[in-house]
Length: 165
Image (tube, rainbow, N blue to C red):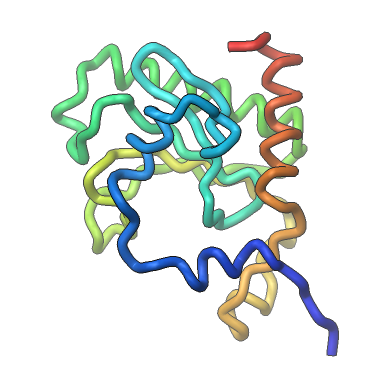
């Protein structure tokens, strides 16, 4: 039997069920973007790596405004969020060369939303063969790159493509 080491997962396994505050608002208000893996900040929205990703490079785009309702967002904010989705997809493509993407919004617990109170868009890079027996039989997803490594690679490509901001 092969052993798969994923030591960063212990934080998720042992984390308390309730996180203090909103993860998006916490990330937005923090002065050091590397702590929360914030990749891009725009006037009304921002992008950050998912701390518990479905795949390497899994990003989330969130409005600065704390709301779980699309109807509460101005059209301009929604437009800026979609522009950021486009730019993040370009960064992911340049840094990780995925074969495709899943991009979407989960609204409501029955739709798969894990965080109901702050709307966000998922960008999940996909590769041919990235799904195997581990998630199906072993209920385990093997992530070949640590979160900090993915963050550094994406930051490097972001700066190459778009500059510092």
